[in-house]
Image (cartoon, rainbow over all chains, first blue to last red; front, side, top):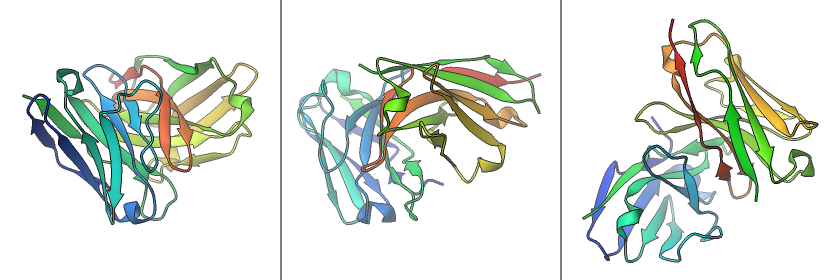
Length: 108
Length: 120
């Protein structure tokens, strides 16, 4: 089992706001990064660090963290945001990267 | 911008060694500041970090795979490679290479991925 826990599936109505969470003890010490993966494609980094977006990522994507939980928020979800989302941080010892199990986002 | 591309056999026999190469373009592995990683994804499953290498040759591997993994770098060709020995069907996966930032930890960009099937 992963050291980072994500809900398997989340749904959101078109244009509404959705929060995808990632829980793990290591998140008390390390920021999470977030990736979007569409079917048949490689993951794409959407958020890293405290709340940083790589170039080209829409500003409707934002990140936050509190205690042992990191969150990815999509404000005004679009149809093209339907995808799997993975969080990533360090393992509990801080030695190596780990990924959450992924959350499948459905935009209704 | 930096781009990564995996290459290697798509079919490997059980007990043999899986070998993949990642070619980096648009940037130099030798410039430092980043680590160069391998990550895999079993069919329909999540992501598993395999290990990384720095341009100097220092490596770090996932403890769960450490006994079977070797990652090497060829800075003259701007490539890094993965070898996974004694493969079984459980190693069938899409293998990605990616550039890794350390603090905070992130992976960007990723290669397109290559499916490796372990079967006789």
